[in-house]
Each structure stands twice: as C-alpha cells, then as structure tokens.
Image 1 (spheres, rainbow, N blue to C red):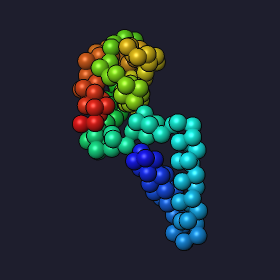
Image 2: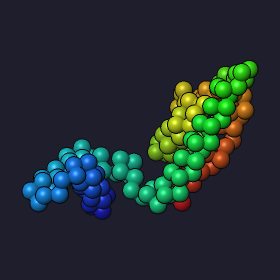
Image 3: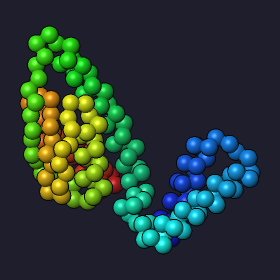
Image 4: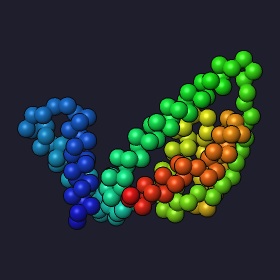
Length: 158
C-alpha cells in the first residue's frame, strides 16, 4: 500500500508540474487521474520495487550529479578529439561483465554509458555488456569503471 501511495503522490506532483495550473477543479482532476492510474497499475500488478523504485530516491541524489559531471567531462574530451586535426579516434568494441544484478541496476548502467558522449551500449544481457567506444582509452575505462561501482551502490540504495 505504501508503494501505491508513493506512486500516486509522484504522479500527482508530476501532473502539477506539467500543467502549471493550480485551480481547485483542475487539481482535483489531476488527483483523480493519478489515483485512477494507480488503480489500473495495481490491477495489472505493476506496482512493485522494479516498476516504482522509490527506495532509490536518496541514492539518486548522489548518483545523478556525479553522472552529469561525467557527461560534461566526456563531452569536452570528445570535442577535443573532434577538433584535433589528426582526429585521433580508434573505434573499439569491448565486452565486460557489469556488477549489477537487478534489472534496474543493469538498465541504469547501460543508459549511463550511452548518455556519456563517446560510448554507447550495443548489447545488454544480464551477465554481459557490449559497448562501442570512440577510443581505446574510452573502451578500457568502461570495463572496470567508477561508473560500474557507483551504479552498484545506487542499485543497493546507498
């Protein structure tokens, strides 16, 4: 029941932020819509730790700022490579085993790799990732990376 209440709360807050209209009738309609969606989700048995990972909220407050910093640093590195007259790229494919065990952890890690300029997740399987990197150094940095360790902590909710 707590997950349902949490989901209803987040849906309603999202609705308020997106509508930007705070009249009583429309706020009531938004609340009603949020409750209706939660009712449907409960009937479909979608309200669980994977479908609504509210327990990861505090961990996200430390992981997301770090990820934004990594995206900016990687974007600067890719820009430097592109602007170099020699264009020192060495496209590389690398397979590695991520530390994550849950679907949420694997998806978070794969999406974080893809969000970081210069790398993209090509295949994501429970025990293995296939990643394309713009340079050999970028490919090597993906295999046993700080990102892997941070996503592992994020997955555990720490």
